[in-house]
Image 1 (spheres, rainbow, N blue to C red):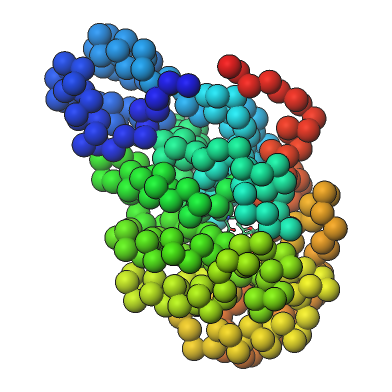
Image 2: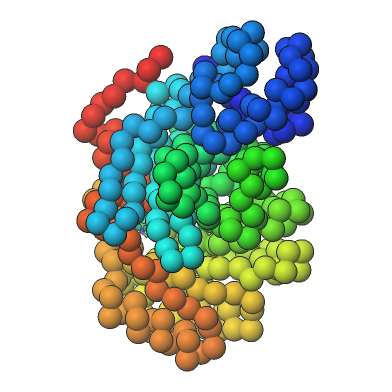
Length: 350
Ligand code: SAH
């Protein structure tokens, strides 16, 4: 695989252009072109520079392989990477803006029992440019017309962002840079299963994204049943790291809690959650489990979800039930990729 130009920030791009003997203003032209989702071969720079770049860098590091469109405007994507791997993403339209969910790894090694992304383990980390390109490609497709492009990004696709910390932090730096697509940190959410030391590093990064923690249980013992990462990090450790994140960034943090019947969705769990979180600057996002056919876990019903929410709210905890979007096009949380790999058997390009 060739190198990826979108891995570079503006300063690095300036150095590269100088090394290739081109004039400094070419760096700005390249940055503008790439930020509009153009391929190197489509950017209007001089031919010598373009040729040199194409010898070393991928012209199209991330391409759209398939688009699934829902009646509610949600779009789900399969992207093809230059080495033939496939990743997935989602684009959701809200009143306040358009949110894109991006992947940070091909597969995942965290092994959560409810999640399809981890079924085949980790294939490889994505580079910062491959994460960025997912947004650039989708933004270009929407912003080309009169439509609004991507305004918000959630790092909630396949992969554990804090298990790929260096590339994810380079991505955060580049996606928020004024010379690039320039998405504000407050419009970006990073979701983690709770890799505690990396939460501290994220807090120290100086890019105050919204921190979202996949909690999904109220005790360490319970959490270990569905999330192997809980063997390494405790809920107490996570809460302390969240506190540090709040001190450093001033941002309220969010807990994701996917309701699994017979596992974590009873009244007693809601009561335990209140005890755990009372007084903390946080919000709880209740998620209806997307049942994964390779797994036996069952979703709690809607009535149970709203009851759980009411108990939390009565206990003084801010909580919402996440809206399900794009359910008519099926697949979510790694299921699109898993299904695709199973049915299409597409050989890698090279
Ligand atoms: N690795 C990150 C991002 C994962 S995806 C993390 O663990 O946070 C974003 C959210 O979807 C996480 O809270 C994850 O636990 C949850 N999730 C995964 N599979 C799910 C499923 N089948 N149903 C509902 N939520 C799921």
